[in-house]
Length: 87
Image (cartoon, rainbow, N blue to C red; front, side, top):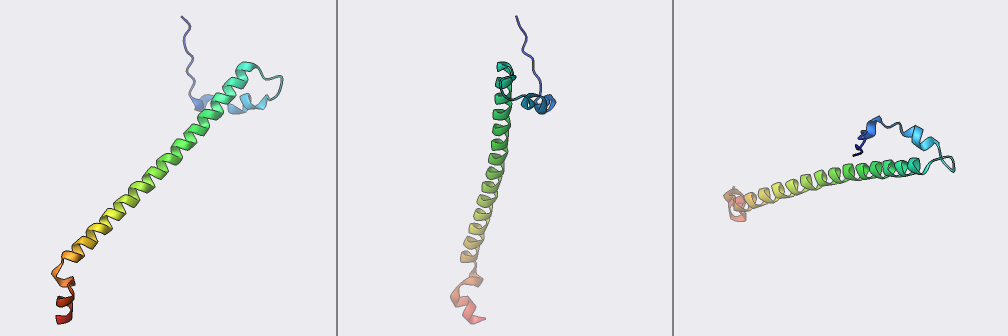
């Protein structure tokens, strides 16, 4: 059985693979370059997605806090028009 070689992306010298372009680049090198490019693109998209998720989470949290404050202000006896005119 042939083992699978696992090389973390950080250890692959991209310049060595990408340096050879054109006919001298082997089929395997082209396939590896495509996989590396695709992986880098997916990692970038995941980072962007994580940032967007965090922004949405913060916006929802802010919205809910503001709604709670509005609800608390409406139910406060000090904020009713009748009470404000007496002070």
